[in-house]
Length: 103
Image (tube, rainbow, N blue to C red; front, side, top):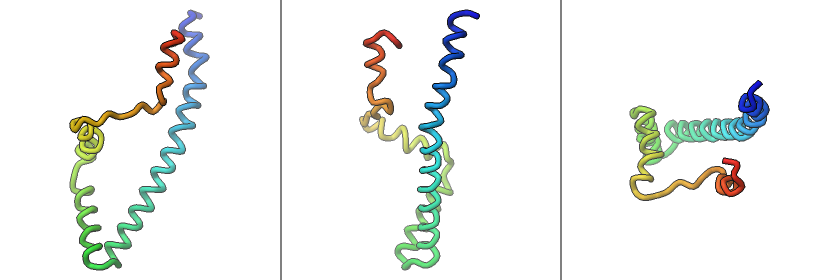
């Protein structure tokens, strides 16, 4: 077995585990927040005062009436066009590994 294939086979499961440890809780938290927000907006739309019901109808119209790709572009690309820079999720660990020659 070539050395690169052996290295890849050894690092596969730790990388998958690390991805799952980060992704699954993030997915569950996002789902819970989305369900709670949707429930609250539905209650406000049905039983809230007229001004809050109008705001909830506008919120629903805005997100249901625009394509998901457009929403993603607005959320993720618009701040970059205004000069905002996103921070790295890994907290700069890539620099530490680059200094040690592991990248």
